[in-house]
Image (cartoon, rainbow, N blue to C red; front, side):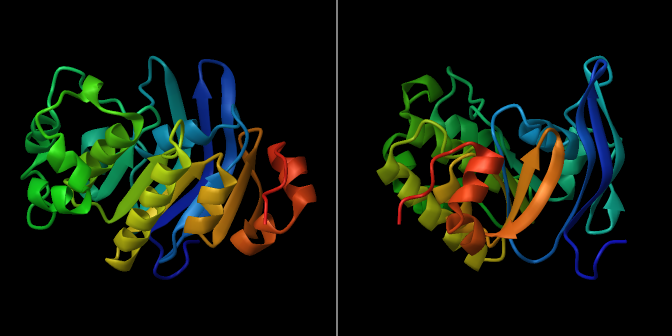
Length: 244
């Protein structure tokens, strides 16, 4: 049963690609706090994003179980309806259009979410994008591409933002800037489901840490506990301990 005030409730979620059983009885509840899902490559984290967003078409894969967003069942709904309910998605790899400019990416989405985020407000959040507004997606740096992917998602005026590996391939200075942006968004009431391998980012942004192993939520812990437990970091994530 979902806890009172739940934003996202995942219950007994299984996901398949053909005969491969990727997600196995994934269950967790997300309330008013942001949550990080961490794990090694190949543990099912991106498949979890796809299942929530309705991006597992029947010819390729399927999801079974329950995913409720503010109490409404979304398993089986098309992705555009899920987005319309208020879930924004920043996919791994950003998935921008190389031939479209920054401004064209943002104007294409502008107006779909009603009052709230506008391209001008995105430019205020990311001044670098304003400087590059006429550049194509393929002409941007990795950090600029990530800013654009986030800005594009914000224009749908989400209540929940799902981000899949937002720090991937970015320089430390850019990552620090994005962390500050994410904190600003949280202060404005946006909740974030963060999928990350970078423990520094995950533990900086979310107190709740869900560790995924073999398509299951193996354990839940806190950012403080995970950051301070080298054995847990090695056992579940196969990484060298965080520097203090």
